[in-house]
Length: 309
Image (tube, rainbow, N blue to C red; front, side):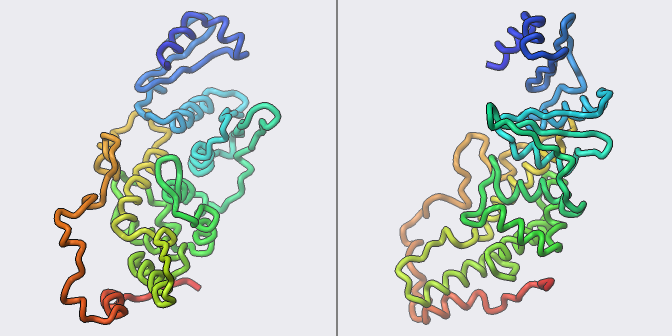
């Protein structure tokens, strides 16, 4: 649909400009951008971007408009009030010398937000992209019943996690040091001042198990470490894309190395089913042990984290 729309615009320049009440239109596709005016149509090399997402292309166009604008006021039109654009703009591209407004909604619900008015201290503002990428968005899942509001409170009351979110997306690959901090952050979000999500899962299961509860809902527990790593890689990838919004051309690595499959299939942690049904059986050596000892033996050496009270 994009290319036919482009052809229609190019063939009906005058009518389109009058209908939209503007003097020029920039029409961006993958690796290409054209400028349409009343008198001509030309390519804009500086705005030709290989970024696929409209959110990042909008930011690139914002920077270009800001450079050429005389009144230094830019309006970003987003009917849905896109959260991604808002987060990207507030962290990286709002400047004191320019006014930026987000125009969102439609009809009687159409509203405007002056993005310059968002008041956050600088360290916390530098966390926004990483925080949004990690705690849930269109590309990365959120934590069940541990939404952004709860995660925000954990972040605001524990500045030691600023470093993790400020550096998420600085590189294409998620470092072990940043992941360790993110893992500890998840533990805090689930109410435990620990560093290991596996330990927290064990503690939460034990609390239910010792009460002889007939139902142990593991969805209320944090993801295990292997799942959290699979969560962290795409979160880091998305954060890197957002932080590179003002770059027209990126050397984007293969997404299959960052938590996805290029075929659209599910990326299993190890495998979906065991090769042999015997793998589901209990280890005979453990059958003679008391249940609590089985659960406790791997966690005896777990140490509490350094919590800044």
